[in-house]
Image 1 (cartoon, chains in turn blue, brown):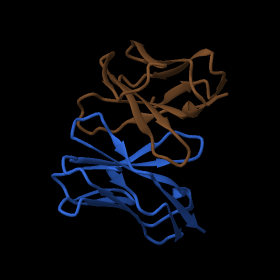
Image 2 (tube, helix red, strand yellow; image 1 turned 135 degrees about the vertical axis):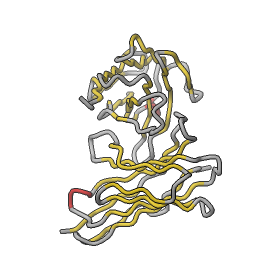
Image 3 (cartoon, chains in turn cyan, blue; image 1 turned 30 degrees about the vertical axis):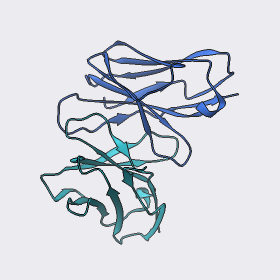
Image 4 (cartoon, one colour; image 1 turned 90 degrees about the vertical axis):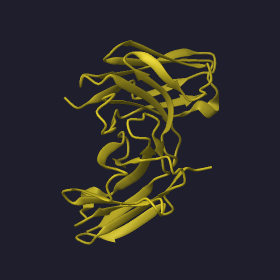
Amino acid sequence: DQQVKQNSPSLSVQEGRISILNCDYTNSMFDYFLWYKKYPAEGPTFLISISSIKDKNEDGRFTVFLNKSAKHLSLHIVPSQPGDSAVYFCAASYRYGQNFVFGPGTRLSVLP
Amino acid sequence: DTEVTQTPKHLVMGMTNKKSLKCEQHMGHRAMYWYKQKAKKPPELMFVYSYEKLSINESVPSRFSPECPNSSLLNLHLHALQPEDSALYLCASSQVTSGTGEQYFGPGTRLTVT
């Protein structure tokens, strides 16, 4: 049973527009969430994180929103760039925990 | 230096072979991780070392044997593997108690068991 779900295996967006990647989780004990980006033949790269005491965290073009009651988080990328084309993984854990559970990933393609 | 290095990049081994995967980081991180990733699947946690001691073993078969000889190095010893063990093996490191939780990943070792 998947504890972290990313229901869209792929997403295509035009350059300059907003990309929205979604993630749902089932374990209400999770209180720390991260997004990773992965290019082919490379390991995942940390993008942005959010803890359950916040509902929004921004870092440049990347914003993560957390809706704890819905057990849902989303990653917004504005504006999207072709270099953002990659697989994006959502991961969840208990704060200070080390057992990160990854979602299955969403492949984002940003079209020029 | 925010790099985690892994060697070898690719490894092909038979089911009777013994081989080792190596991982190194020089960021002063005291937590190191092994993950297994199958094609089109997310990384799955295998082992966690904190302060060079094994803190988490996610019920991994004994044919995988981790070792952390010092704070910068992490090995994964492989013996009598099965073809279904073929996967990308990722190493990662992080601060143990920073609270940010972010892990730095290496590029992985692509393992094929024949």
